[in-house]
Image 1 (cartoon, helix red, strand yellow):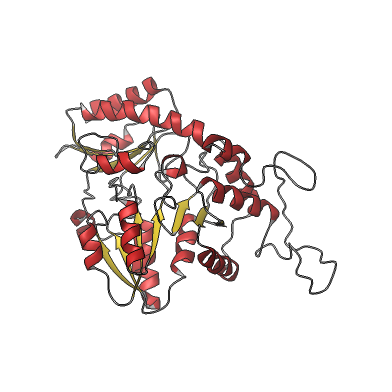
Image 2 (cartoon, helix red, strand yellow):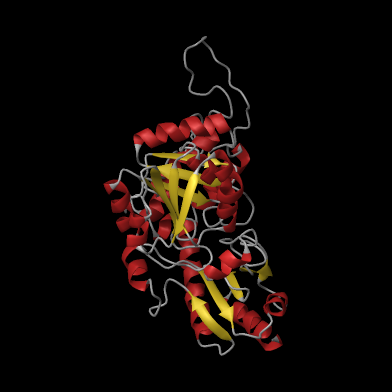
Length: 379
């Protein structure tokens, strides 16, 4: 089954009870058990729900995984995955990750005894050199948030397997439309499904997916034990959003390519970050492991230009957190999504005060470029 078809017919594409082509929203918190101790399929809403299960089967199908688990947010999914590890375990983490992931690691997980080393995961030797006797996993984003760096996932997976480690990839920016980390050798994929998978800025959700049966059993136990599961209503919304992922991503990327060309030739832009830039350091790796380059573009204004005035001068493009929705969204990472990272660390990792991240939406491209032109004229 090809990917676009799998988006629509993967997992449970119809309700087994009625034949409905849209899985109903089962809001039940508990289920009638006809025989005591008989191990019913459904017993309690946290442990399992038919709407959530249909979504999870679809998510597993589109990432070529065997098991998928839906959570109340992307952060909840990431926290549950990190809960596979124990106090004293060491994890290698990419140096350009979402600010919320950094906050979870720095302010929460370290208090429970997990150890972390931060490296640029594009540097394979640095990753291997960071492995210690107690190292258990490598965690990375590709493309990263917000600098859109590309890590060679298959090479990291090989290093991880060589040393008996788990490799975990946040695939939010690429989506399974453009990249399938499990096919590249990764053990676990995580998503902030709030973004492209949902696609309409109307839900908060997270996913963790694996093709390893043992990891799947562990994640199932943790999902039920920790309990940060996705609601039936949001499970239904997310499943509906996923079905249009392919057509949305094609339109997102068509607009992104044109905005990249516009920004690249703008004399008020100091630098543009986009995996599809042929001049980018990581372009060949992106071309090798990705079907397309996504629709997130980051760029820096030239020194002395007013970042605040620029983003506040936009009328069509919304100044807002998040990304991946049908509407275009813009933000300043240093002030918004990555504000929880201390400034000295942000600057060291290349997240300057002038950096702007643009999530290119599905509006008419002429209107988007006109809006950007107006904001550039104001500075």
